[in-house]
View 1 (cartoon, rainbow, N blue to C red):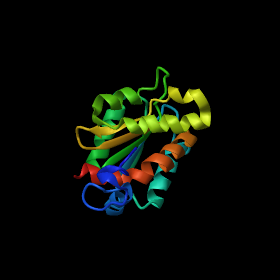
View 2: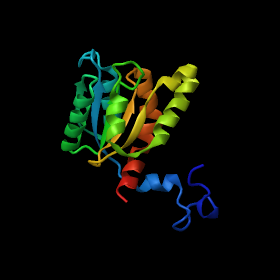
View 3: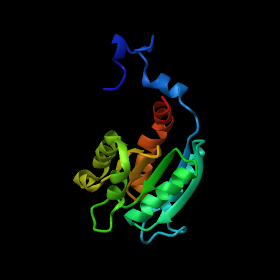
View 4: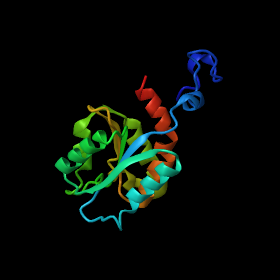
Length: 184
């Protein structure tokens, strides 16, 4: 898996042997990120997932260009993603609304807008979730991809545990690398 075997060796000599570590070394250090919480019930005081994302992003040296709590409604989510792009953000991290209930519409709103999906995010998120919660992990419709505007979106469940998992294991370690890939 991955880039280790490219060029017949894993040492990163020459153009074809680049390893992920070298990609990360060249990657931009700071990304501009907008945080969106999709919820019909959360408030500033109870938005733990949004708070975790803002804290982790700031601690990692990324710029939070804004954040919002929006109802779980496709039009409102789409409008907030437009605001995220207008704020100068390169990424939007969306928490909540990725389940299966009739009110969970984040997946539909975002998947409709994605022009370049990144299926590995949802796949790996569910794999890591499975290790923690078992088969219920398949109920998560976490997803990621780039919108037509260029904004790159990660959508994850709203639970603090899920936000921490997505942020610490998947998003933050690769944000600079993704930024570099998108700019090539």
